[in-house]
Image (cartoon, rainbow, N blue to C red; front, side):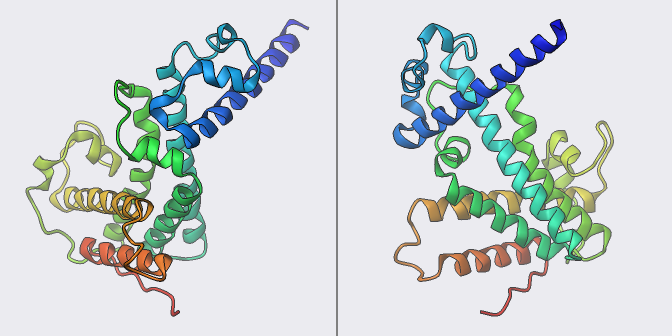
Length: 245
């Protein structure tokens, strides 16, 4: 009986935490991260402020939960789109396109969460170490695409920068599959550097669109995005064939 009671309490707690995070995301979209406060969310949910602090002891704790939630959502869609594309027989180039499209779709549907983790840092907030692993999930998917292309000998050219191994921090090489403490072969380090370029280019392309900078540039933002992703891929040595319009 005590175990069952504990389980009920845990489920009730998880449900309330979910409601708090949902209310916080709504507040985030309306007012931005800088104006997020536990008291205002408590009012929206009809809770006492003191009760809110039992779940999130500070605004920063709530922000951290929102940051992790956003990064995990990105990781989920990126991993799922990569898995679906591979299951359909797609090679590295088409997998990259599928991942990029899923990331853009998520950003368009979750603008506030995108801005929280990829936009201007929230003043006075330092993201803790807990956010690192979720943040790396998208990058890990992209690195896996480059690693697969390298293994299939489809990365052209195979390597361009032998010095890259000394340029990247160990965590980057670990994301690319190099065991901790081991030296990365030049071609592997080079592929990891290309994954950094693709990651940065993807975030930048979506940021540019969401900021409205394509308003007078194109009548077809989706197609322009695909062309941008294709161009990035060519720079990284991946071939991406876009479907005919």
